[in-house]
Length: 255
Image (cartoon, rainbow, N blue to C red; front, side, top):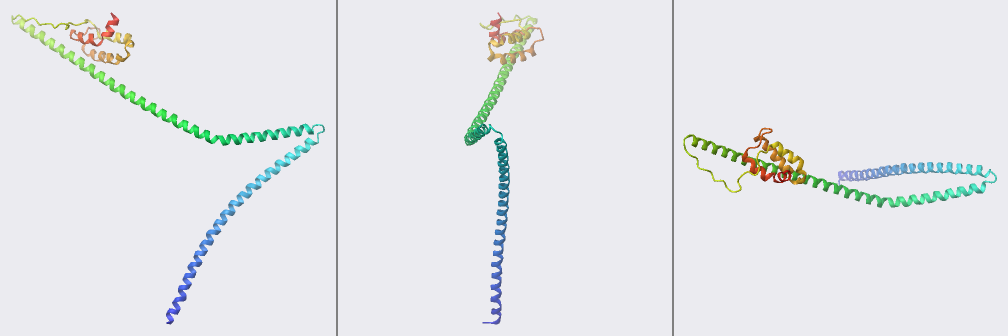
């Protein structure tokens, strides 16, 4: 074996030993820290026990002093002892009742939490239903408004057509021509006449509660009809059929 190898082998052994020693030192340091933590906890527990013992000793001393004072009172020793015994028994009963209440508290808390969860879920369901109802009412109101607007627009177009027919008839009469009589379809005569928007609004307000499902519809028609008549003036005759059809329950009730 060469001199170089003889020198290297001991050096490797030294490194290995140093590594092992370092690892052992680390383990020892960790154990020391664990022991220190355990000692600290133990000291805290001992201190707590000492405090408890001191309190107990003071309580015992106070009780002894009280008992000595009571014992010094002649003729009352037996009554005082009975009172103390009863008080101790009452304290024992209270402790037992408290223990039972503590044991029963966990199930009650669980039941209460479950009940609160059900209540919250019910509240969420109610809120969701209210939102659905609000959306449904909004959609229904928009549809009724569109229906009323469409009906009024139709009545306006009929009014314009009737005015145009009158103008044409007037032009024909001015030219010396005799206008041909227009054929009136059965049932086409207006059912009502001379009604104002104010009258329809009053009837809706006074008698709308008899048909609550149609109040929004009637209010929509009143709103749109205001565009085609001045305040206090009757609606054009071409609206008579529309008014008679839409406001029939109110007109019958007001007849």
